[in-house]
Length: 311
Image (cartoon, rainbow, N blue to C red; front, side, top):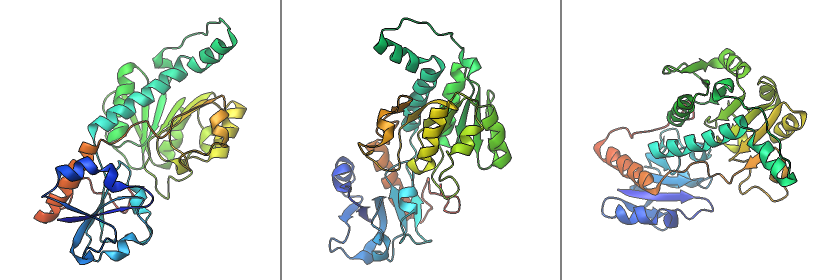
């Protein structure tokens, strides 16, 4: 099985070196336009592939993203309708994301931003405490990662509501909402909002001033979806007006975040460099191998994206 590496400005071969070595003999990895016969290539591994990448491979059947998100491939202009797109699903990634979200939820619930500011000013002042049960969390997106984040927050005692485009079953202690009406209902009872949505045409810009205005005043945003979900100026205005007490941002429109960007110095923003969670190289290699084996057997690959939904 020949697999082509497709990326723009990112050295996929170097990144996947250990897995490429491990999979030698079962998969032959070739570089984009390296002189290999393009008609022999049925599979690709990609990360932000060049705009015309898929035009060169007439028999390509599957493209694997190296992350949990597949929008980097789905948005490629040359991606054909007949090419299936596969993403990485890894339980350990969901666990890492849950830990990140829990940290920031407690950061808000226990007023740690204020305490850190007071420390710098040498102010000794206790703030009244609230229990976790008094701070409801709403989660946008209830896939594999959202389900783990919701379960871990609920186990700690946070009231947890989740929203998805269509109805999904939820366990005891987690309340599910769906559709446009469900979104408004969930937001009305939310203080901490966690964004875990996939990036689609419908979700782009969803984190905007209108949405922030539907949260409890003094709410908190944990943005771990995709940069284009957020209307940045609307967030700044919500923070400055007090509608939001703070925000934890891990993903951005432009990465790395430009040094002149106002997010760097805003006192109500905690910023991390797209590091909330990550897919392991081992999981990536396992997905690549499983996809290749499915192709050989004439079976549909596991964890393929629903192209009509975008995730």
